[in-house]
Length: 251
Image (cartoon, rainbow, N blue to C red; front, side):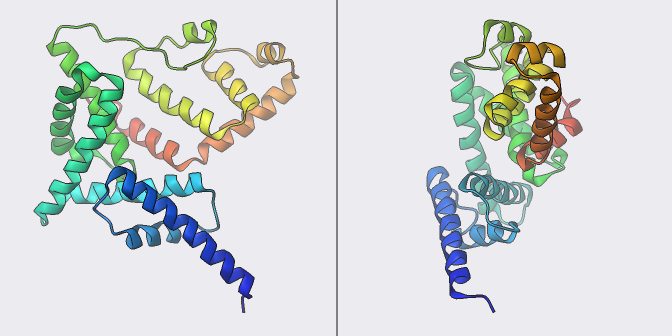
């Protein structure tokens, strides 16, 4: 029989999880799942206690599945409309942050693409990634319709001049790069970040990285292995790139 301290720990963890769920519901005005239902989904998917950051990620993942199911079904019209309403707000917020001059038009066009092509989203947990990909397509279509050049933007902020030159990528590749780089910054420690970025974005050899960072080439390999292993375990990153791989040829 579990002792009182174990029950107290369980109760404290449950409260922490509830706070995370409540905060996200309030922040995004989510209405497709009741707080208790979302809480139980998150708790049911964790084998052991995880950090508040991981709880937030899992909460978003489970709500994304609910959003996908609401938008895809046709029996409950009000629920479907609510789902698309929440999706519109999400895409519009993203669009205004990136392309304010085309935000509304790109978002409207993206909503049509999401509605028409929702069956192409093979992973419900990656539905927001799917919608964001459609927003990128919609933005490019708006740019072409207006006869403008597609802009290039820096992928890594606060990076060195040489790194920015190396990372001068075409627009279609930028989102993949940004998602990966955000994960690198979120998941990896500083030295591991530098090794991964210099190796896979800078194209440097282990010896060059060793010289740049002042560590041995053997330690470079150790850090690279650790970084790749950690990135592969990230659920959001894995879902996103599984989706991108499956849909990269869509237009």
